[in-house]
Amino acid sequence: METVCRTGIQVIGDQVHEVQDNIVVEDRVRLFLNGEYLTTLVASPDRLEDLGAGFVVCEGLADTVESVEVSGRDVRIEAPVKREILLEMESSGGYRVLGEAKKVDSSITITADGIRAVTSAIESDVWRRTGGVHCSVLFCDGSLVTRACDLGRHNTVDKVVGYATLRGLDRSGCVLGCTGRQPSGMVAKAANAGIPIVVSRAASTDRGIMTAEEAGLTLIGFSRGERFTIYTHPERVPEVLKKLRISWSKQVT
Image 1 (tube, rainbow, N blue to C red):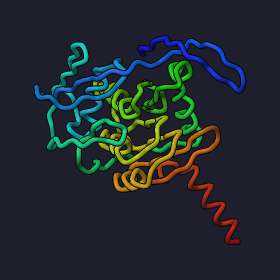
Image 2 (cartoon, helix red, strand yellow; image 1 turned 90 degrees about the horizontal axis):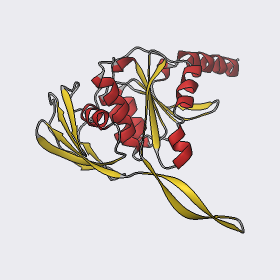
Image 3 (spheres, rainbow, N blue to C red; image 1 turned 120 degrees about the vertical axis):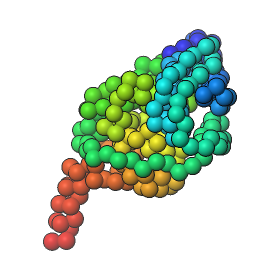
């Protein structure tokens, strides 16, 4: 991932000194779908094939991607479009396609230790060096298959989903891990991609939780250390449900 070094003056209490910081590069990436201009994304300029493919899938425009070509900062995607393209601006400055999230169809489950493994994998060297990026990871069949960093949290999801799409991985058997909070637009990306479980180190919003509930997606937030909170569809974490029932039983008796 591209970074640059910039000089700053750091203040710690009464101490002042000059520092050299690694700073993440911000760029603009133009997406074209089937020969037509689609949108411009503010993004980190790496893994642009994955970004383009993932955006189309995560916004529910297509389930598969036929090809992606990158020329400079222009990304040209060919895909069988399945819905009308109506864009709205997100609070983060990016764009999303209007429409309800798709329903998730998957019977996979995850353990508490599995959730913690996903959370641990979200950490990245780029984040430690810059403090200026979000990261997402994708686990399939219990193993980490890809990690992506970007200055935009939405882009990190597009990149890992795009990676899976271009390699023909079964997304219904995957778990997505994110550093960023989970409003409705973020949750919808995972649902549109057919990913049944999302684990985030951050908070969700009320609409994010409602979107996950309606889409049949298991949404887990505040996953840090030994702690996590399951907001929707806890049946995919049967170990936790069993412990909760035992706790209820003891309270009743």
